[in-house]
Length: 256
Ligand SMILES: C[S@@+](CC[C@H](N)C(=O)[O-])C[C@H]1O[C@@H](n2cnc3c(N)ncnc32)[C@H](O)[C@@H]1O
Image 1 (cartoon, rainbow, N blue to C red):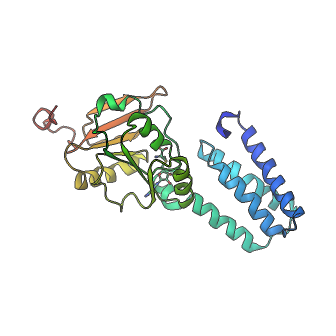
Image 2 (cartoon, rainbow, N blue to C red; image 1 turned 45 degrees about the horizontal axis):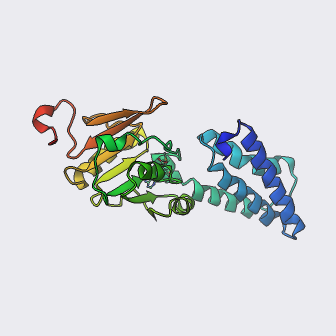
Image 3 (spheres, rainbow, N blue to C red; image 1 turned 180 degrees about the vertical axis):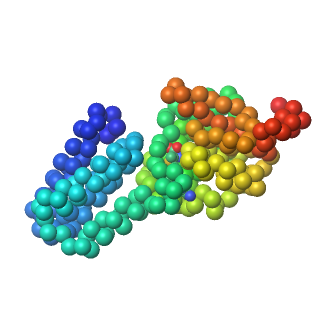
């Protein structure tokens, strides 16, 4: 895996691979533009394995920028446009406004079943499932649950479905799709997304169901539990109906 190699070795290896793909494409008789596209797409897809946004940019952009700056190939404008569209498909602007792709650590939800007991076939949603790391962590916590994922980026949705064949992974907007069918909705989005998540959960999720957020807190709501990951990040756990902070928590506390 790319992230396990010391930085910037992964980037150098991906760039070298891109050049190899490019040269092989040429040898096989491809014109410079398709050869460049093939090589740059290789780099773009491999950039998904990097864990930080700036590393993704470096990994994905290194090869096309080197071709552009060095003038190693005369590439027509349409090829750069296709490359830009491919990059927007992999990292769509809409999804980045909500949350860029950062994965849930494998054991992040190990403490969840002790706080949140679910029936064996409970429907659980990872809203914005990316490459499926959150789904895998949910599966480790709740092996019997029916796991669902929604993802806006098509390539991520396809990659996630391949990585998590036991889950139902669909393309879609987490804010448009209903949350009512789920006993637990798991989010790893952004601080700015939380008020919207609170409003949607309150409007749609049934009493007794759960909203779980890695790292980002629903600031105005009273959490039922909090887990702390070894890296210090919290997992916030809320039971529906959500209880505003400062409300009489004793009176509105959920039944045991
Ligand atoms: C921080 S990543 C988390 C990925 C995964 N849930 C995990 O924990 O490993 C956030 C993901 O949400 C997706 N996303 C952001 N906004 C979205 C939206 N409105 N609808 C669907 N997916 C969205 C992004 O494309 C990205 O893959």
